[in-house]
Length: 179
Image (cartoon, rainbow, N blue to C red; front, side, top):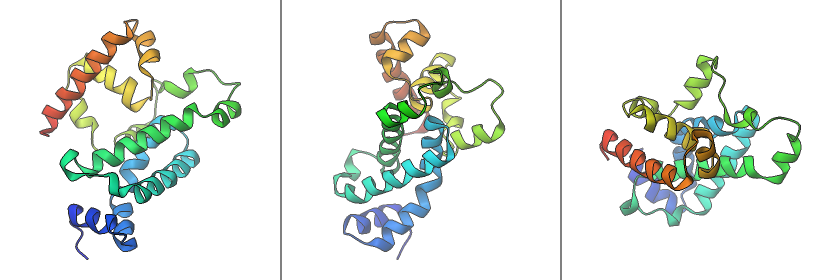
């Protein structure tokens, strides 16, 4: 079986377990990196990653190549699953004695390993080409999993302003990446 991404996705959508296995091999590290950047826990990242791949398998028919790249579709599933985990009642109960900062702020002295995990997609090289304001917004909303409400409070700007700036920054990122 060819390892061409489009062919793998098509075969997976047709129910090929072998294609699904190759899709997993191709994308698991990058998706795990995105999940880890949000949840900041190896065991939880692995658990969420398994849930993500179950969603990918069960919902593969909803992916449409005309709507965008498969990786972007899978990345959004991963990010949303990680954020959903952080918002879950079970997660909040397990960590109710810790401050909110523990979950959303990467320490200034973060290790290189954290940066490698966060950038396992290679996306940071593109993000770093943006204006500093866009870098901050994408970091808060995408990598740290802030809601727009919390992000607006963190940046001390109205929520609607943050949403507008975020949309502009994402469009700028798309342009930089050549999409």
